[in-house]
Image 1 (cartoon, rainbow, N blue to C red):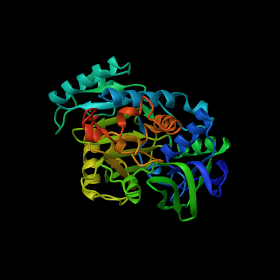
Image 2 (image 1 turned 135 degrees about the vertical axis):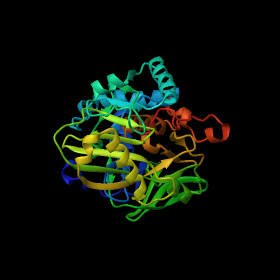
Image 3 (image 1 turned 90 degrees about the horizontal axis):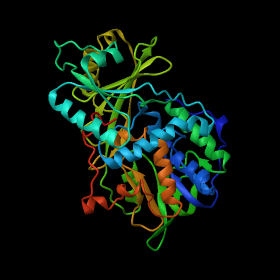
Image 4 (image 1 turned 90 degrees about the vertical axis):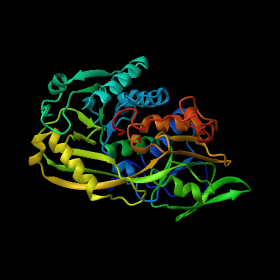
Length: 401
């Protein structure tokens, strides 16, 4: 994890008041600021960040981009995001190393084959590219995968989204920050939010370690700590925070032409442009705000990776890390007003946050500008947890990443 260079955007000093204050200078917060300025002409915006720009979960993810989700609401927002990704480098004028190399989900048993066929059909009905492969087709698409029947979880097929891929996470943050800065947005680093300014029931600003900043609208977009911030305003969110670990190997020549995921053995792996093998697993079961996790998660992840890719037994570990993910009861985000006047929230993306970055910013900006949820955001309102209109993506689209 590297602190971003200063040359891309100016280091702003906060003013006393803004039209909108966004808490969190990660991908979603920066994208929201950019689209508020670009799409809605709202440039009197301040993004405040506890640490440095893009230094939170944006720097601690494995950069998978895909849209092959089962539920209609999920498919809609993630496909919208993927379409934005496909034109994002040109729109922002920034090389983000976006690579549509294909995302392959492995199938290891007949039950998963049936559920995978269901997902592929649902994707196609929603206009999303999806293919169902047999074991030989999996081997042809990714030659280094072992399809031997003599392993714990033999590969009997897979699903493929060829438009899926990866991008360079820090460059995505810098691209949105640079574009937002050019449009007049202030980005204030090292400004921890310690409380909220209230007038009656309404939130009219934030207290930070760099002073009080008033605003007509306050938007919370701080992955991993949404529930902590919301509690400062007296709001209890249906959110749990968990460590999510990943690792990278030393640098190697290109050997893996795509992204591979397996739910049965729960490992996902890609190869970055520099040559590292980037691997991750599931979230740690316990709740924590620590940016580390249990060793057994990494141990099981590596055992699975070596079984699927015997070649990886020779790879050397470079470093491991942990992010903090907000997980809602239905594994889908919460976007929109909180019920507290002046306070909006965008959280609960779980392991889907990076791939949703441009769409999250787009729909949250649409929501903040008029103060009412946009069409894509409306199903993700906070009140669905009282109405029962859940969008359950737990295990619905293979690995959740």
